[in-house]
Length: 288
Image 1 (tube, helix red, strand yellow):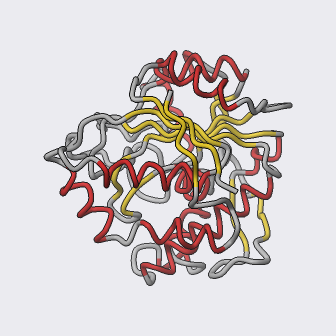
Image 2 (image 1 turned 180 degrees about the vertical axis):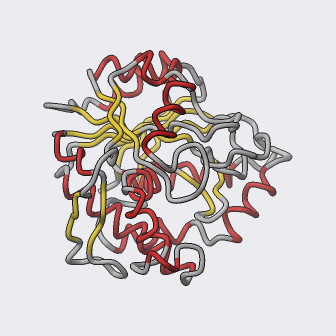
């Protein structure tokens, strides 16, 4: 059965909320809203005012986790300063999930590469999940979307190193590349199962650089903005975004972004996630 992916070429905070409501999936209980807080110096990340209508609508708490690399977000103290600098705590209740240890360990019995996932322990406070993703390129994953937010995004600082190292955190930057991508799929599957389907995914194809929002020095966007996508299937929404990039043959920046995605075998995260049964690569794109 094909998953539904709602799509609009209009990019605005109000359209994000409209598409979320069209999906018709209510997020119940205490809602964690996963955002990318943006590395200090990054010019491309989506700011809190853009996400405000949909976050207010679900009554969610904005959540993040510390990074595993040097920068403005690798310790709790520095990350909280960045949160304030970027205005997240001015708009929303905010929860740094791994502000204090110990991590919450989620088992992955069916994981291909890793058998456990380390996430911020505060994740246990929440009943459902809204994943807000800025779709763009990524220096290691090839692209960043819903699956990356579910895996690297929700992992604790140690958990990020564990995923990057394919189970050996000391190999954070030197592990086999496809094993790293498969570890992301494994970690994403554990979070999907943890919330038992009580999750919605929103990808926004805007400010699409080859670099991630985790880069303090990032290239400017290379492709024109494409639109907003909403689904309850993290595989379908990421696959749809990739397909839209491939379809943008008249965009002079397409080749540059595709080179980043393909040179890192970015689609393999989707392939590995589909093999684990997280969702479907077959989808119905419903344009609004």
